[in-house]
Image 1 (cartoon, rainbow, N blue to C red):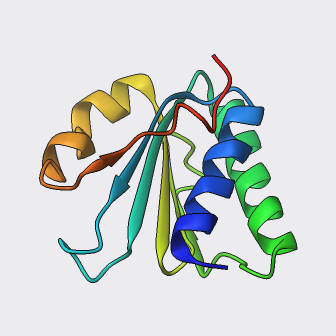
Image 2 (spheres, rainbow, N blue to C red; image 1 turned 180 degrees about the vertical axis):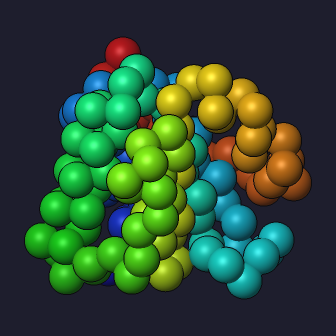
Length: 118
């Protein structure tokens, strides 16, 4: 599975569990950390866990298990590292505080409109 396919599958998984304001950033030429970042918002800590569990399940089923998960017990911001893909799931106020979209502002945002339901 290519990094792009992984990212697209993760976006669909997040959307299926009602993640809000999903952003897919291509970071290939900006950092060695990952090829793609996904940033999204959850409405509660319970939804954060649901979103993270779903992404991990879907990618693991495709032979791409997460390498590391940070923040799952704390609940306001969870980072799931799949190697070439990093998924960030935030509560709204924490997302606004850290503003990763600005931090990674040089990363092109990939259009995901064909992957999500409105």
